[in-house]
Image 1 (tube, one colour):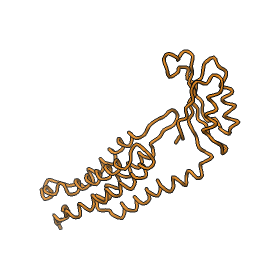
Image 2 (tube, one colour; image 1 turned 120 degrees about the vertical axis):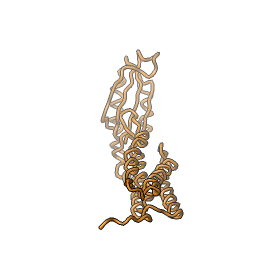
Image 3 (cartoon, one colour; image 1 turned 45 degrees about the vertical axis):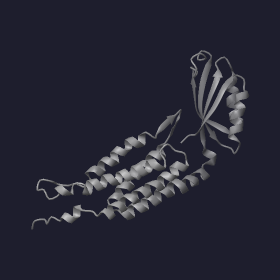
Image 4 (cartoon, helix red, strand yellow; image 1 turned 90 degrees about the vertical axis):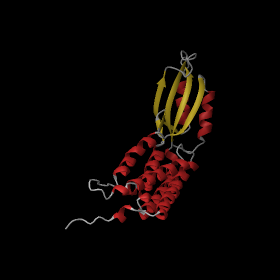
Length: 242
């Protein structure tokens, strides 16, 4: 028995199409809202565009070539464009990943962009429940689990510290002693012979280190006190290392 061609499979009403696009916009916006509130590089509008764009692409792949569905030599594959979205959005996510000294930031934002693309594909394909439950779990992970993680990692924070010191100074030993007495554990230390300024590169060295907060104390006050140690010409703390 031959297969019966059903042209209605490749058709979608304007109302249904609009509903899917609006759903993708709303779900992408929910994920982007958390990133926006956190001040990340890819925020509210970026996630909306990624999610909405993915929905448009899957709709195009499923229904955009319906005029050719009845042609004998045409084989429509609704997943062909969707597969390119999954791999292609990785390049966009890579743009949010930045290396600052020892640390790497932006990994969570890149992952949220990737999952936003997947949710957009689900919404565009009419997989409503899957899109909704995925968005709920993502928002829960970003909002709730983020706070939960910070609650249990307050004593495990790792900060990056940048010091500029005179090469002729012996103040590095005092810096290390001060950090240790203040409850900061040094996980990594790199000494660069060249300073940031070409004019002073012959007499300054740059020290980069990861410090782990072991005790509950005022981190900012501890770091500010380093500026008064002999030989220290600059102090900068870059923030929590992810």
